[in-house]
Image (cartoon, rainbow, N blue to C red; front, side, top):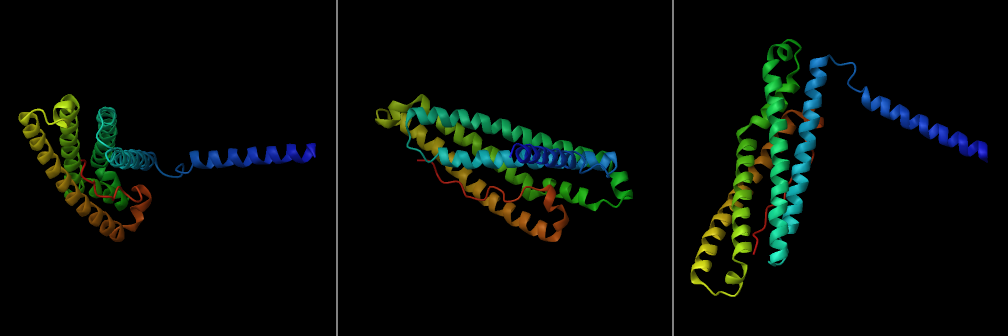
Amino acid sequence: MIFLATFTGVLAFEFYTYAQMKETNKYAHFPPITRQVIRLADDLKKTTLNLDKGLVTLEQVSKVESRIKELKSTIDFIGTLRILMDENQAAIARLVKFTTDYKVYFVKKDLNWVYQIQLFYTNRNVVVHYKSLQLYLDNFEALLIYCYTNFYNIKEAKSKEHLKNYDEYYLRYRRAVDSHNRFNVQRIEFQNEFLRKYPSIKPYLPGERQTETFMLWE
């Protein structure tokens, strides 16, 4: 039994080591420039997924009752989301710049899938979607900060001025929600159509994106 246990442990370790080596060297047969663009695409895919997960969390957080503690935690989380969005935008910029700098190489090697990835992230539907997301975060954060700063005046309706200001913040926030949901639907439809047209780039793009429409915070 000691022998079997030892043999099983060694075999499992060998399989693990082999899997790790295979993962490390899976792009070894590609030229250096091609390996680099694949790494950039992988990094972009990772940052996009992180952002999408963060947006799902924000949607869950924003459904809680409007208490001052939850207001503060949601404001803080939007700050975290901004970091994720900056990382994602930086990853997009790196990939676009790299594919532009080495355009001659990719054309010569007939690596059309590289430009298909670039075309996706530079398409107007995707760019406008990111802009609408930024506007949504800006207006949601502004509304939450105002509510947090003037919580008791608003909750107890002590001041007509505070309530009027709240209505203005909420109206801008609501417009931003409607706008983002509209552009998000367009981005989803574009992505589905794009992947049907260029199925070879599916491994280099995130799978299911953030598809739920944002509900209005009350």
